[in-house]
Length: 267
Image (cartoon, rainbow, N blue to C red; front, side, top):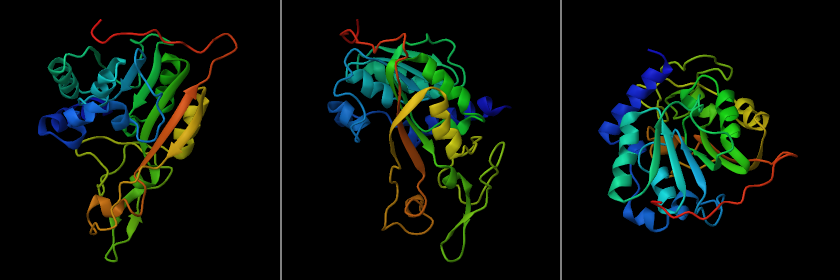
């Protein structure tokens, strides 16, 4: 089995088990969908009528919130079980979604310059090479389109264990190639999935090489100072688990920023 088959099976299982990544948007979250999606203020004040691609984002959360906020949403994911949650929640809430089963590595089924926003939660760790992903994102974004993505921090993926003094051990090389080895401390790994370490130059540099300009960067805090050693929130106080990036595909000399037309959900 290659990484696609393995990771599809892993996320199908996580969806069936009701893992945290398969938690659907709640009624409370849907009351303020943009505030739920965007605590940093990176999104426009309104997404009404915008074309949004939720990339590798099945599970009934991002896509549902964007649709509730009035966006025209396409959700693409490798896992049919994760996408089934989007289908179920969209039907339950009378929302229109375009649901596509596929890999973030090949967006050939999507038209060029067709999305105002690409929202990409943590998932680049599941592909061996990130540059093709960023190149595809830049292709499907409209001029002036926004790319919001989150990635596993490379140093977090280097951690292999915790010693008897509760210090975290870097046991995986920064230039490691190929699938990551199994490690004792798997706090920020998904069981059964094949994962890859991508260096900062590949993540940040790759977005820039794809023709996008980075406008904002953050390291979401997942630690808790009261957490005990062995809890993932304890580790989160010492090693930032994630990187969050906002980028924009600027208009070229032959393009103009897109002005979206108003759209009513369900039409």
